[in-house]
Image (cartoon, rainbow, N blue to C red; front, side, top):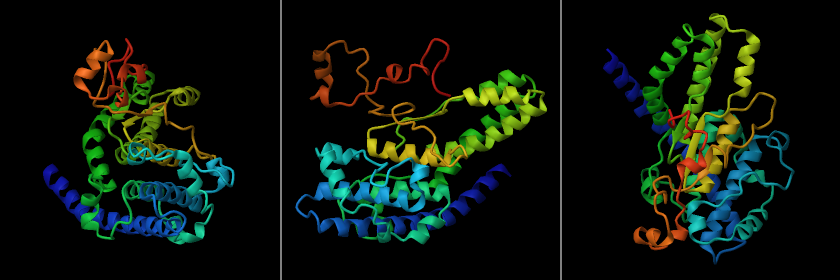
Length: 334
């Protein structure tokens, strides 16, 4: 019965997931293509600069099309998306030149299909940001061919529906056990639940972290209800929740993708007062190569035994970057 249920869900995802991704992919492509055409009249002899400016401009205009300056905490001429993509950084593109080119369009949200953007759910909007980043990180223009998107980009981008399915399959049972445990050891088990720390070591634009955030939000409500049922005072619950920190961690080489992940998560985890929560960039979302560490290589000569240009390697030292996770009282991520 359980297997049949999973197969039924996968059949639904096979139908709905690609349809939704194709709709968002088409929307992203139209936005990126229009912005690219507009900027191309400003600079045509530097394709990598043009591509990077297209990506940053598209992300910022889409964001401003959907949300007010007040919610974003921005001035009229200020951009929230500013980091270069990995490809832009690797090509040595100037961040200043990119921003200067992007600012030439300014607030021309009239270039965008505003109605379609504003009707998207927050989850679909976050997915759209990921699509725009992906398309705008590589040489433009791309043809509108969904079957060739992944081959053109040279990477695989997991559809949100598949990420949701995988996250539910791997985490749901464990979270249910954590919530049930609150009935026996109310306060301590509730604190344990809120201290869970989830990592995506190659998080990109945050598709899996978004799925985890949505699932954790749902189970946090259940955990609060269970704590109340188990006799934990409302004031104690509020104190525990208010002192808990972000449980979502991510690492990626692409600082532009990390920026998309950060802003997407902040939009989804808004505290209800209309403003964005504090940025996680540089705190629980960090830039680096999670597969490479110089730990144990004591001097530069040792580094050169393994890497041609060790100073250009963006190695990631886990204990240094996340000391709160790798402390004496904690054995790592959950």
